[in-house]
Image 1: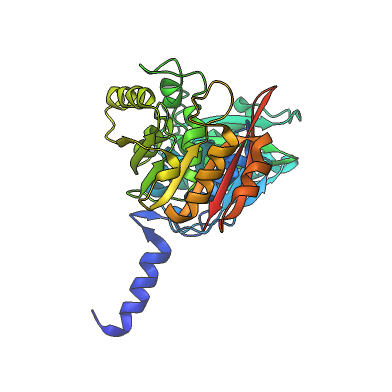
Image 2: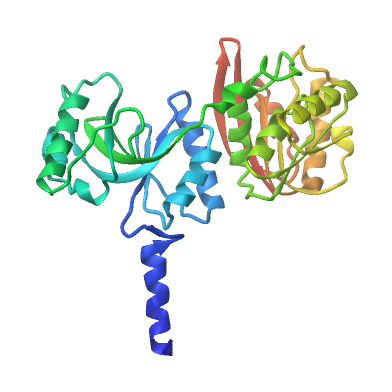
Length: 359
């Protein structure tokens, strides 16, 4: 290849072909979970950074949109890792709801159509548009026929899945690339061999792992691992998992769950205030309340652990606490800064606060 063409070819592949996917001028759209959109957005931004993608997102209610130099294969990996994002896809077009019929009819559907299609409309909020899925599907069908395509509708297993999301007077038309898998419920308390009353939901555990910003292959350490919820989600997200607990009985329960799921994670008995090994990422649901087996009173335990945290943390920690204990945490932080925090409602008498910390 002649030297003068090398730069142009490099630019071509960067701009047009990423892992075999055409990403020229693509916008990617993410539909966040309605249970905690603020936490879902924080998780999404953290995961996008691990893929070396810019995390500047334009948002509308539960919709996050970004121009990212990524292909479909990366988007599928991102969606698989996320806990609080419902679906991911290519943004086709958007606009005011009053223009939805017109834009749908004028879009070049033959560009993205493959074998069959389905249409779904999701309205965020109480505003009704008066536009049905049947009507929109008919517009797409006619547009495809006009372009010379013989379209097929398949409501069960369509190759081309179109989602119209209505939010705050605007619509967003998305070609779905990946949707959330529902296997989190299979790992919740009551479904695993070993359970404990204060166990965290797998979605929240995965979200905390993602907020750490750890990349695949990194090591995540949980110094209060309990029955292993965070270790399980870290391992399933592609990280190396290590955990410890001062209670040997809890470690036995943890190892039983890990074995049941076929997960290889290092576990050992250790007082969290006596850890010496340094870790890039530490993620933990700190023990609290009467149901937790504390080796000493909570104030003493937190104080000792947080003073030790600076010595063993290399990059980032994510800690989950009772919201009412936030002042206790702030008073005992030693040369570690709070990057951000998110509140997550559990029930009437308990709201958890997830804190992201950095050296």
